[in-house]
Amino acid sequence: MEVQLREIRKHFGPVKANDGITLSVPAGSIQGILGENGAGKSTLMKILSGFQPADSGDIVLDGTLVQMRSPADAIRHGVGMLHQDPLDFPPMSVVDNLLIGAPGGVIPRRREAAAAIAGEARSLGLSIDLRAEVGSLTVGERQQLELLRLLWLGARVLILDEPTTGISAEQRAVLFSTLRRLAGQGKTVIFVSHKLEEVQDLCTRVAVLRQGRLVGAALPPFEVEGLVNMMFARQVSPGERMVCTPGEPMLRLSSLGVERGRIRLSGLDLDVRESETIGLAGMEGSGQSLLLRACAGLVPTVQGRIRLNNADLTGKPYRQFKKRGVAYVPASRLEEGLIPGLTLTEHFLLADRQGGVFIDREKGRRLAQSRIEEFNIRGTPANRVESLSGGNQQRALLALVKEKAKLLLLEHPTRGLDIESVIYLWGKLKERCLGGGAILFTSSDLDELLRYSDRILVFFSGRVSALLDAATTTVDELGQLIGGRGV
Image 1 (cartoon, rainbow, N blue to C red):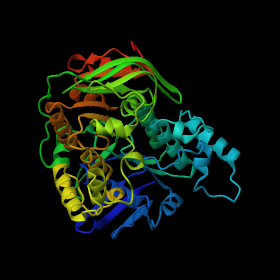
Image 2: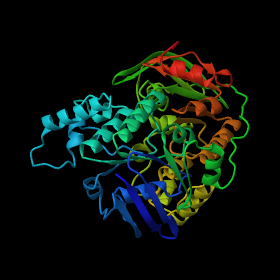
Image 3: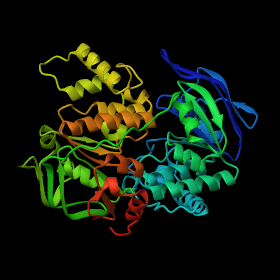
Image 4: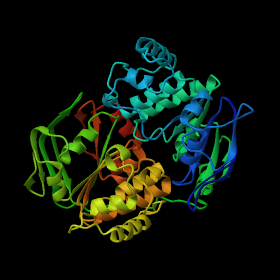
């Protein structure tokens, strides 16, 4: 299906999210959409998929002018969108998730739906347990489920918004193979990303947005330097690797054992020292997030001890860890980290814990404004968090971490951020290390792990490698360990 967007405009108050964008996407192509955080990528895709109305402009599909008043309208016209954060119901089964919103009578046809989805999965070389609860699936599996649901509903245009955030390299390879197969079948794929190497690997054409406008387009072979210049209107350099001198042990894990669902870690010994950054690598669901939650007091241990600055916190709740300077930042922004419906001001007021009976909203507004400027959040104190782009939600989440927090436990801290934002935020995180803080973080980006970690632990099916020196480890060596060789 050919997609044409003509003079699309969308304003949010004084902010021009989309400012007269015109773009044509041929059928059977994989169209990359690049741009910095807040460039208008997600807004444009939400307009195309019926989640938001445009202020003006036209959408034309295969030469026919259409109106997208809702996602249901869009799917009837053959357009479906896979969002950054999965739009599913974790407590329900895979089949029941598929049936929600599907056309049909009062009585759901589970058997018929299961057979159709299983056939669709086989044709694409995907494997998913249709009887499982969605909450037990990895991010990559939930992504496959949403993709299959859109195809089952008849989508011929598939929009993927930052789809590789939070999934492993192996899951990314499966996703890319699936998308190439779908494009080969004549379906149109629109791939929104800030990762240049992924666009180079996957896309057959690229459009670049900046500050709400279409500023350029390119065909393979893509020139990375030229794309970066279009995205930021300047060169972006990561600078020198920042190395901090480690101090005394801050966090000490002794013979730690923890389990949840199918994942179990046992006999883990680890010292995290002051001024040190330790990266946790591995395929999604291998135990990295479980370890972070145990170190925050969010998951109980089954054996061993957790000591923080010589205080035994084994079995203590999160609030005790937090009192002693531990901050945990989850990967699920709108499910666990932020509160949809509340403004940025309200979030900073909640995080700042004021004394007294009355809430000082003006103080909260000033605090929000200062954090917005410090973390370069594209928004205002009055913006609700769900109205921000995914990258700006991530910046807001990191801005909520208290200054006095000494041990930062971060799940995918740069999820959905563009290159410039990644460099800026890691600079701020490393400032905490220079001040004696420590960081334990997960990432699916091997380059990020190697560049910003001092040491790295690799997880594979509950097993944990010996600590690696990040400065002397290569991407290939790290990839081999993540695949289970030598762990």
